[in-house]
Amino acid sequence: MRITKRVFAVYGLLLSLCLFVPVRASYSADSGISPFMAGNQSPLVQIYGLPHDTGADIAPAGTFHTSLNQDLSSNYTVHSTAREQITLDGETWRTTFAARYGIAPRWEVGVEIPYVWQGGGFLDNFIIDWHKAFSLPQGGRDTAPRNRLLYSYRKDGTDRLLMNRAGSGIGDISLTGGFSLYDERGEEDHDRLALKAAVKLPVGDSSLLLGSGSTDFTLQLCGSVDRDTEWGTLGVFGSIGGIAMTRSDVLRDQHNPLAGVGTFGLGWAPASWINFKLQLNGNTPLYRDSSLDELSKSALLLIVGGGLRLPGDYLLDLGVAEDVAVSTAPDVSFHLGLSKRF
Image (cartoon, rainbow, N blue to C red; front, side, top):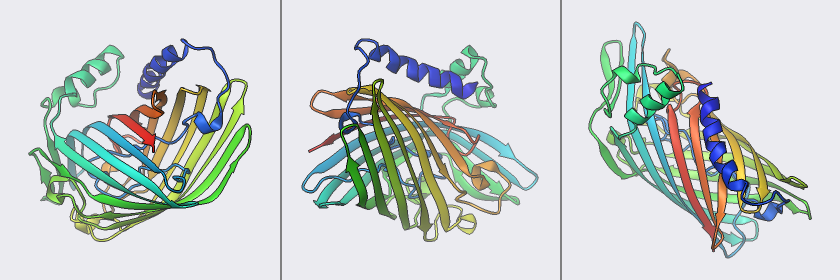
C-alpha cells in the first residue's frame, strides 16, 4: 500500500495534464519513452559506478545529447543484530550533467559529471506527515531527531563508518561510450539494441561519501521496443550488465569487487508530448560479510512517473522512486531530468 498510494499520486498529476488533449497515436521517434536517468541513491551505493544511462539510443553522428538531472533522496533506516548496528539517516542531493556525442555512425562517447551533497536536509516533517495522512508505517522516523545527518556502521564493537557532518563537492566522474548493435525503424515501430560501457574515476572525496575511491568499469546491453497503436505508443525497455570495481575506500574489507546490474521498464505515450513510465532498477549486493539488508541484500528500486515534451524539443522527466526491497535503497527519492539534442 505504501508504494501504491505514491504511484497514484504521481500518475494522477500526469493524467490530469493528458486530459487537456485528445488521445491520439504518437510516433515512436517522438514519444520520448526512454529510461529514467536515475539510480539507487543510498549513501553506500550511489558512490559506485552503477549506470544511470540505460537507454538503447545512440547519439547520431555529429550530434550532442545533453541532460541535467536532479535527484533528491531521503534515507532513513536503523537496524541492529548481535554483531552489527547500522544507521543511515540523512538526505542526498545529486545533480548530474551528462553529455553524449556521436563520433561516427553507430558510435558515441560521453561524460557524466555529478555534484553531490550529503546533509540532514528538510524532508523529514513532510514524509512523517505523508505517512500519517495515509496511515503508513513510520519505521521509527517519527521518533528520531528531525533533519539529522548520521551515517554509521559498527561491527564487532568497531566503528567501520561514521559520518555526521554535511559535505558537498564533485562526485566521481564517468567516461562513457556506446555502440549501436541494431536500430530498425518502421512506420509504426522502432526496435533498438546497444552495447554501452563506462569507466568511473575516483574524483570525489570518499570520506564525505561523494565517491568511493575505486575505479569502476561497467558494461551493459540495452534494448528497447516501441509500437504505435490507436491508443498511442507502447514501449518496453531494459538492460543487463555488470560492474567491476577496484578496492574501495568505503568498508574496504567488505566491498564486493563485482556486481550485476539491470533495469526493466514499461512506457505509454498517449500523445507526442506526454508519456507515462514505470521502471525497476536492480543490483546484486555491493558488500559482503554482513547480515544486514542495507549491505548484503540485492537492491530493487521502483521508479514511477513520466515525461513531458516542452517547446524547443526539450524533454522533462519527473519520477518518484521507492525501495521495493526494503532498506536497500532510500525510503523515497525524487527525480527531475531535462534533456535536449543538438
